[in-house]
Length: 160
Image (cartoon, rainbow, N blue to C red):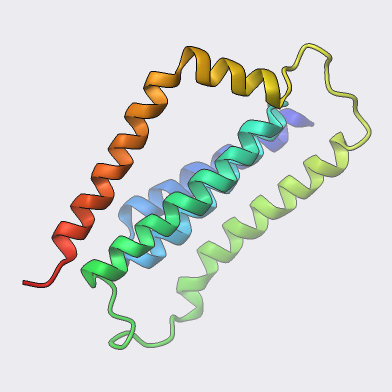
């Protein structure tokens, strides 16, 4: 059962990622990338890592995608006034992938609702202590990289 759900979510994730890479419109690429992140969160949930799945949704599908959208809007890459309303053919892949992810995650959540998680899984406190004691330097380096990316986007987006 879990293996089937895993393969469905993995297929959706690969297809959405390919569509995000090959997409010509940057906003459409972001929608496909968010779909890929939600599928990855579902895979983490199936692997009995609900905390990592929650981080995937909050950090990547939320914060990073807002940052990408901010950069696209600042660099004026998408021109919504020039484009018309998308045809059904353009909506169909995103709707199918999104519905598949939603149905699979709902089915997985309903199936695992009665199951007890193994006692060996660490809680949030143990995860945080391990993360910030062993990997504190790496987290600081990543936060500096994100800061440099924002400063670079502001530099590129400013008007001369």
